[in-house]
Image 1 (cartoon, helix red, strand yellow):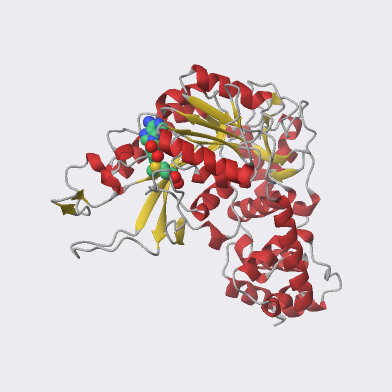
Image 2 (cartoon, rainbow, N blue to C red):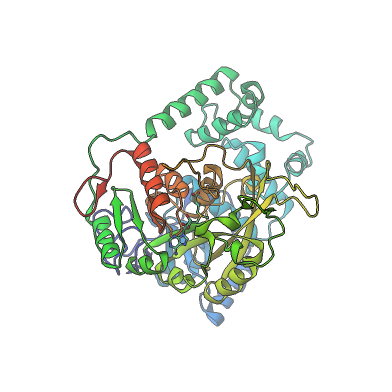
Length: 500
Ligand SMILES: C[S@@+](CC[C@H](N)C(=O)[O-])C[C@H]1O[C@@H](n2cnc3c(N)ncnc32)[C@H](O)[C@@H]1O
């Protein structure tokens, strides 16, 4: 999203203060010609005349409270009636979402705001099912349980939704390509082609073909191992130069990432205002600064057992001091996700609330936590992350079930190993970053991790097509990070000239 009524604001892609560059995929210099989006308009009934008049009165009395949402070609995703009333004077914001994502968002926003009767919901459910959506997807979009959808659609004629869909003359047996990733995911998640096939009215063989097709596409999209040092485009070079000027001891870069050795509090000053779309980071928790660490086991002959509290990098850092800088570098559409411990959660929450419109939390349940050897307290199997954003943020909501603020899985099993044989005790597994990055950013977005450690967040970010900037102040872990990036993406440029 880069424009409001054609007035340019800082763009997350080109980052300039109103100046779009050629690299910016959202380059769009003129005011958009807004138009209704037939695909959505056809789905929802028009406002009744009373509702329309009430909206007109409210807009006259209170003005337009929120911008309407449009796609880059001017199609209205949300706010059709406000546009009808206000015409070209309507305030709008442009969304960078894909067609399908925007369509989903339009449905969800309309469902949430409109008072639809059961009959109207029924009609929408039938239309969605006929367009190829599965029962589960229809239920997710309408914020209803799957069983409610069946009951709703049975309605007065007693027909089940499958009857209606299967007898419908305009049923599309050709599966919409946008469904392919969902089909692939269902198979990967454990459903058999035979179970999935009836939802799409095709044979299990066709489902298998689609799964293989998606897999081939994923394989093709994997970044190839580059042999030559990658080109560092001017947009990245500028940040690299600023980082060196700000005191970075070393900067290594490619076209999609920058890794800098140095202190986060200093280096962040080199990041231009509003450049970052997501701050995803896992800072030290300063557990060693706590007087009593009930979980660390003290051995007289060897000191405390190797818990985080004994790691040097975890000591004496107040990672909340950087929050005003987070506010400065984050784009208004951006999001923040910071991993934190229970003792710091309140502090983060209070400080972030003072800077952002919204603060919430998420929890990662580790299925293989460190056992409670002393059996004196709970097994510590949950780690928290805190989210913050302004009302204008972009959030890629997909299926209800996938959007719980909860992640479950094992702690990292294949840790990166430093030359001295040690591993980073806090290395996060890829799946935790993947969930956050996918929900809170889009391709080409800049993601900042000021406390990068081994760079686990960055590896996932770059694989997902994002631009990544990572800081790490410990040379040992910085080198581990650089090596990992080299393994995955080939040789980088050492910004002072040599190859890293
Ligand atoms: C919890 S670890 C991050 C681990 C990382 N998520 C991973 O998966 O490897 C925090 C990292 O922040 C680094 N760090 C601590 N204070 C820092 C600072 N002021 N500037 C930059 N890095 C810092 C530490 O050296 C440590 O590697």
